[in-house]
Length: 568
Ligand code: WTA
Image 1 (cartoon, rainbow, N blue to C red):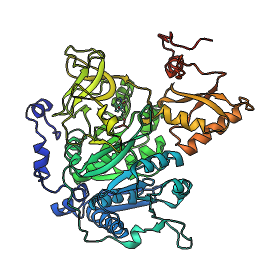
Image 2: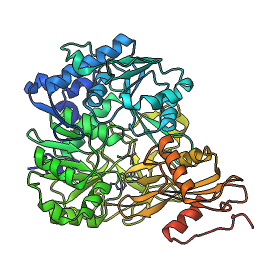
Image 3: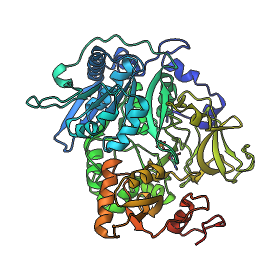
C-alpha cells in the first residue's frame, strides 16, 4: 500500500493540517528545519538509524552517519558559525561538492536561524559574484580547491567577512578572511541552542535564472517543511525501511527540498554519491546500496537509455521499488523504456525553485500516461490561463500558462532584494509559472514549453542574458546572441552567435577559447556547445537582438512575423 493511498480521497479531504499534526507543529510555535531533520528524529527513537551513506569519487571512500551523527555535526557547525558572530538571518553560502559538510552545514546554518545559500560548486567566479553580491553574504563555507575563485572576486565583496575552509592542510598558511573548520576533528557536539525560528523565518536562498537581469534569489521560510515533508511522503512514497537516492546536487532546489529536508524530516536513510555521471557507476551504486527509491532527472535517464539495455542486465537492480523524475520534460519514450528495463515507469514530477515543493506529479498507484507530468498535488489549485485574458480556461486540452493559487506552505516569499520582480509573477491573483501546458479531461498536465527564453539544459536553467553579458567581456566579441539548440540527451544546449571585434578572425581555436572563457566565468552548464560567427546579428529597428529568429532557425521552426527586422 502506498503512503498516499487513494489520490481522489486525499484530494477530497485535504488539509495541510495533516502534515502539521504529524510533525506536531501548531500555528505560532517554533519550527526549525535543522531541528526537525536531526534532533526530532533522534527523539523519536531513531538516533542510531543510518541517515547518510556517503560515497566519494570511489566506492572505497565511504562514510556512514546516523541521525545522531548528523544531529551532532550540525550542532558543531552551528556553534562554530555562532562563535564567529553569524547571527539570525545572516546569509551563509555553501559552496562545496557533495561532501558531508554540505549536508550537515545546511542544517547547522538553519539551526542558528541564519539563511543557507547553497551554490553549485562548478560555478565560475562571475556566477558566484552576482549571487554573493545580491545576497550580501557574510560567510561562505567551501573546499580548498574552490577558494581561488572566491579570491578573484573578494575585492568586490565587502560584506563577505569569512571564507570558511573545511579541508585546509595544516602546513598551508591562511590568506585574507580565511578561517579553518575541520568537522571531523571538531567532533560531534551534543548541545546547541537552537534558534527559535517561526513559520515565516527565512530558511534558504536558492538562485534561479531569468531571461533579463541578474539571477533571482528565491527566499524560502521554515514553514516550507510542511509541504516538503508531505510531498516526500506521498509522491516519493518514502517509508521507514527505504534506501533513498536523490541524484540532485544541493546547489539546486531538488537537492535541498528532496535531497535533505524531505527525506530526513521523515527519518529516512539516504545515499549520496559525489562522483560524476556514468551509466556503469550509477547502476553499480544502486546495486551496492540496494537503493529502493530513486529520484532523478530526464537527462540522466536519457543517458542511461543511450548506454543500452544490456548494461542494465549486468546489475541486480531488483531493490528498486519506486522511480521519480523532475526538472525538464520527461519524454514518453523514457517512461516506456524504464518500464521495460526496470519493470516500473519513472513517475514524472513538476515544480520550480519558486514553488519549493512538488506541484504536479504522478502518484504511486495512479495510472501513468507516458509524456504527461501528472496531476496537481492534493491541496494545490492549478489552472491553465488564457494567453489573452489571463483568466483560467475551463475546457480541456487548451494551451496556456500554468497558474497556481498562491497558498501552499513552500511557496517562495519574495525574490531577495527584488520585490518588484516577485510582484510581476502574479496576474488576476494567480501565480504565473512561466510554463505552458494543457490539461486533459482526466486532469493530467501535458507540458508544452517555457514562455520565455530561459534555456533548460539537462534540467538546469541558464539565462541567455547572463551568457550574452559574459561573452561581451571576451576581448574578441563585439556582439552576442544566445539561444538554445536541440540536443538528443540534454533536450537543449546553449548556442551562441557572435560578431567579432576588428582584428579578430573566425577560427575553431577562437571558438574553443571563448567556450572555455564562459565555462570558467559562469559554469560548464552555461558554456555554449557551439559558437557561430556572423557578420551582423538580426535586430529590430530599435536595436534589440532578435533571439526569436535565431531560435527558430536552430529548431527548424516557422520564423513568424519579422516585420520589425532591421532593413539591410
Ligand atoms: C522545468 C526544478 C517539464 C519548467 C525543480 C520549470 C519541467 C523549471 C518539469 C523549473 C517537468 C521542471 N516537465 N519541465 N516535469 N519540472 N520543469 O527552478 O520549465 O530549476 O519552470 O526547479 O524546470 O526549474 P527549477
